[in-house]
Image (cartoon, rainbow, N blue to C red):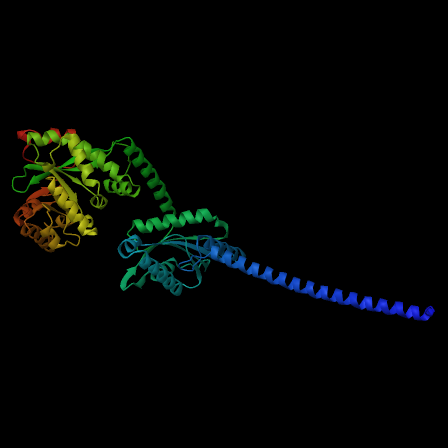
Length: 489
């Protein structure tokens, strides 16, 4: 018997209801799963954003000091510039900072101590100079930027505050030492925001600060730009002159103190007229060292000097010649072999050569200097300590090292005929050298009174304009060769 139609309908409705409930449960479960999946995606996206932000922050942060690195600093600088643009009454100050002689900290104490010193410096600066942005943009180079009120920029106050912030006492690995820095500053308004230009101007001010003695803060001015252009041209001239082997040896006479007879000559570097316009000898030598041309320059001049002076020595017109060497030479393992090679090539006798070194070269690395001096002496080459009396002479070293001469700095000679204290100081320096068994040479002698006093003090040799300026080899030969030219002045 078939079910009644109503029962069939009820069964069908029941099946549909159960199917609907099942479908709803399936949809609900799917919705829950989808919601969970969306939540997971959002969490992963948030985590990814956080990691990206951390990575971006790390890319803008110096690992050692936790300051902004170069990339981070200039991003902060851009933000400061936008603030100045919004406030026309404000100005931006950009500064470059270079720690003074920091390489010596690395060389003497090692990289770990140097890194600790950099960290302590950055903390000290940040504590002393709030309100600005500090970044580490190089090994021992930092940059600082701050906003100041237009018309209220007290440059001296900012410079003084900057210097206080850059003078730090560091304690690392049981060592305490003082750090100072050279700082260059430039000021700019909304119309001056060329980043590359501002960086160049700050660099120019920084270089000027270093050139004037370091441990100072200097603001950029247009005269510096002119000076930098002149220096750049002069550096190019030096490179070209060295490349073309244009530098020549000139010779300045050194005479005996008693009879003023010619005994020796110091070799000095000079260049053809017009090659280095309006440049002093000191500037050319300093820039040659800066651009790394001094070694080649010295080698060229020495080789020529040895060839030109060889016949003077053989004829007995001079007992010896002297050449100057740099601290870098004294620390160069190959210096002695290079010097010996130049002497052999010129057939110049080593025992008629004197090498002049400064106290900086002697005491920068006493062990290396002692070894170098010993090797020079073994070849018969004599050694003179230049600028004697104005440095930090180590008397024990002077008495133990095979040094033959001390050359008194001209600053000790200048006022001896007018001032009692200068006279006493010069006399003490002479007598100290004599007591150590050294031959004492006085530089910068210009008057007869100076010469007489130095003779009375016990000085052995004299050098200065009174007896002749440095001249070319040809003029020196004409003036001082032959028996009739044996006495000077």
